[in-house]
Image (cartoon, rainbow, N blue to C red; front, side, top):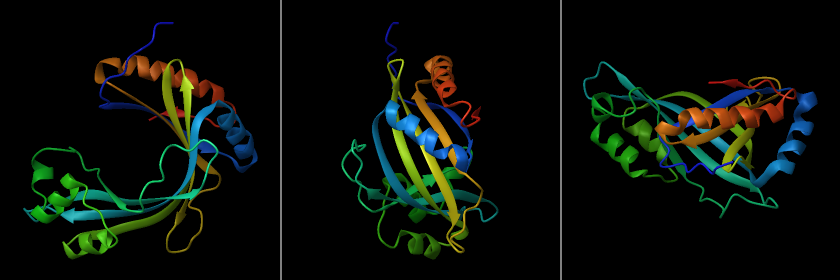
Length: 205
């Protein structure tokens, strides 16, 4: 089969679902056998609302801190620094609403400015905390039809109670692609996800 060259990714094909506790070990064993790189991370995620300059609307952010928890046999790469990552998730992602954010908040978002007290800084800028969750993630990068599919198996717990938010673990498979190749990316991802059945029922999202 001809190799597909994927350009700058502005489209991501995604499938997601839940794996039951009874099937978890079998799924992880399958992914370990298929992967070319893997690692385990702990993530702390804070959902934040930021006021816009008009005062009538708010932008939505996620503050995420990722920490490598164990050395894997085939790690994804150098251990990342323990810093906060800011993700702007309001729609539209760019445009007038995004530009209406307070200058200090906008500068943080554009420059990926992070630090030990990033959450406190956002609070000082008038942002409001919506939720706090902790996520333990196993990340597998698997080669499939000349592309690399990233599969994340993760559990989500409340930061306040330390209890799981749902039974079992979530599974997400992702394949980035250039916009003109999104149909081919969706086909490749669907073909890959067939291998995960019936351990987990994945659906396109």
